[in-house]
Image (tube, rainbow, N blue to C red):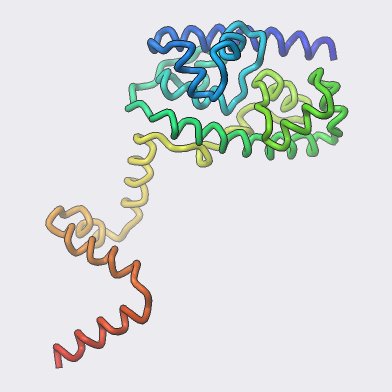
Length: 227
C-alpha cells in the first residue's frame, strides 16, 4: 500500500504541474478554472500544487478551454488545433455526466478485479466510505487513484475513455454529421446537399413530427384534389 500511496502523490504533483502549465498558456486564471469545476479557487490551487488529485472528468472539462489534447494534462503530448470555446454551463454539465459514468465504470472495474470496497480503500489509502462515494458519483476520483485501481484490476486508463458519452466538440459534431451523410444513397445525398431543396427538407421534417391522424387527413385532402 505504501508504494501505491507514493505513486499517487507523485502522479498528483505531475498532473498538477501539467495543468498549471496548460492553464497559463491558455491565459486562464485559477478563479475561471475553479468556476468551471464548481469548486473554490483555494481548492483549485490545491489541485495544481498536487496536494489534491484531479479526476478524469475534471481533466476532460479543463482540456477544452485549455485547447489541448486530454493526454497533455498527464503526459504532455502534442497540442490540438484551436476550437471555439464552449460555455461554462455546458462544461459543468459534462463534468457531472462524466462523474456519474466514471462512478459506474470504477465500480465495475473493482468487481472485475475481485476486490471489495474495503480492499480497494486499502489499495488507495482511502476509507470504505470514500470508495462508496466514488462509486455513487458523489465525489470525483483523482486520476492518480483511478490509474492505480485500473492497473490492479487488469485495466488501463484507456478503458475509462468513452468519447461518445462526453459532450462532443463542434468539430466532432460536424464530422459525425458528415459520416452519417456519406451513408445515404447517392441520389438522396445529392438531393440533401442542394441548397434549393432546403424547403422540401423542412416540409419533410414537419411531416415527420405530425401524428398519424393528421397525416392521414392531409393525404385524403390531396387525394380529393387530384381526383
